[in-house]
Image (cartoon, rainbow, N blue to C red; front, side, top):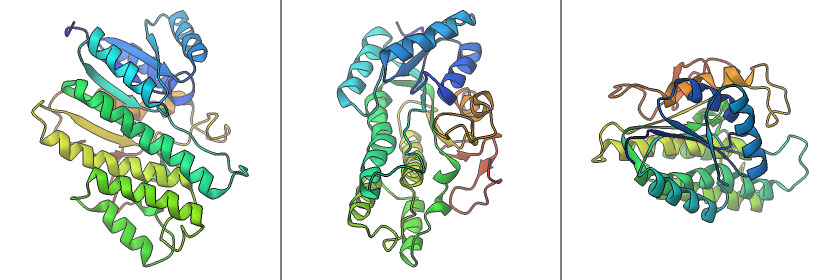
Length: 289
């Protein structure tokens, strides 16, 4: 059971997730699971990959449903006894023309992108084997510099998010506080930016650093988590405005998923689309894409 290496890609039936699947099917020495919220779309994507000569497997996973997450975790545990690569790609974004109130957008976006990802980690991290690799697909707007509401509150938020002693519980509280002030209409006065998607990805990037500190103390050797901006990609999520192909968007996440054993750098790091390491706290970022 433990001899089969396992890779999981979430939200992988289309877009960047689908392109990551192609990369992992080509390069990962083991079994690759495509997961998706919708069973029909997930199985259709697997069928397309099989037409290309790959051999992925499918399992339903809705990161916004704790029962779905737990069912998948139990399946991996009983079937394989562990997990070697986890690519957290599943996510959600409102369109710019969305008419839902900002508070409603905040609640839904933070719940799915931040807490959904966190819940997947809570369920699957106990299954990680030595030398496992975790990748969070973040965004250019997941850089700390995007926390730019009113001052001095924004500086205080950035300082807290950048703290090397920030805990998961404190970060959770910050994400919940953002939802609260978004619903109250005071998010800018409290220092937050006017993009719920950006706040959710800043949260994921901050979470990456916390998780790597925990991995460094873990008895399982060489557990590594990183996060990256995949580039501005031509997908449904960007309303097909991005200049990158999905294959270009898959380059950095796949690179991080396939990092060799005992890598010394790239632990809790934030990378840009062409695999450039970016200082998440101080910048600068390489540019728009």
